[in-house]
Length: 150
Image 1 (cartoon, helix red, strand yellow):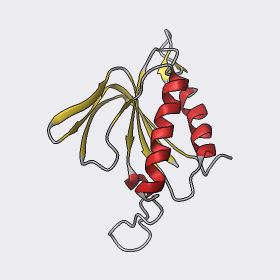
Image 2: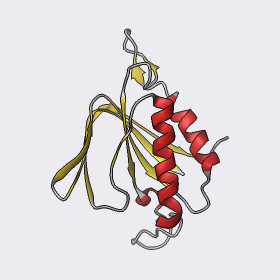
Image 3: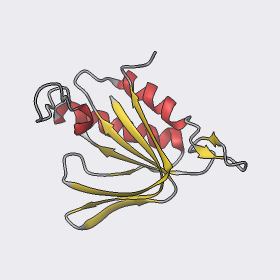
């Protein structure tokens, strides 16, 4: 399971020209579910993500986590994070979990993120053609792969 976390001033998801969700200050999480990912990957990532100290304290030092700044969270599914570009110029997505496997894990990730962050998580729609807008704050962008725990 891979995530790209972006500290944002605001983020939104639109589908077919209609806004689906919006957040203010917080984090936008792009989530890629790989073949073989489990609840253990979710639990490890959630623990890591909610505790990331990527928000500024009063001295301007990144020392606070999303809960400490009462930040919003948006999670958007993005299978392209699992792209393999080793051969040729057309990315292969064979490492991305198929929808039957990925959807339940995506939904569980969002549920547990809501529980751990203490706020309802904004989402996109799994498999939809989404337009994601954001104002990256910093910019701060962090990538984490649950298969690189050590």
